[in-house]
Length: 197
Ligand code: GRF
Image 1 (cartoon, rainbow, N blue to C red):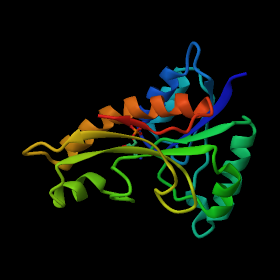
Image 2: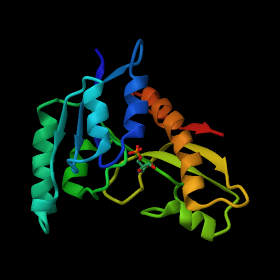
Image 3: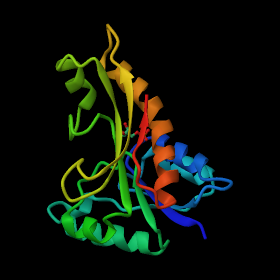
């Protein structure tokens, strides 16, 4: 039976689209829901257009009450009984109590070659450091931010004259290849890292 995949996002959802479009044919998984903490997230419309159930769990009423937000998120997820959660540009830090029950079943994509540049502004930081290459990482989610076992990485060159925007675009194109490749393996129970580029 297909594994059920929930995708969490906060933004435009281009990684979500890449994941959804990959889950066809003999793929071991299928999308079951796309949830966002941001009602206006472009990814929600894209999911609806593809016939995937969507939902919004707004974090703003829960200022100072992260666990309250996460309890609601957990409820919204439970309705769809996912086996796997893919974070795809989900811009909320999740606490240990949310992460623990999902450990080994929740994965994230991060736009850097971890362990370099956890957190935000990864491309600007790579340029600032004078790195000659950049990339993206898919990893299992643990309670520590942008940490957890690495399931795949893809590399791109940093080119002369790159801005954070041009580098981000080059990395994003690789994210759309890496994330589906990792999910396919992961959903089949294979945690061997996918190394691209
Ligand atoms: C991607 O760069 C991803 O690595 C980061 O947030 C961005 C999401 O982009 N975590 P999109 O919403 O998938 O287009």
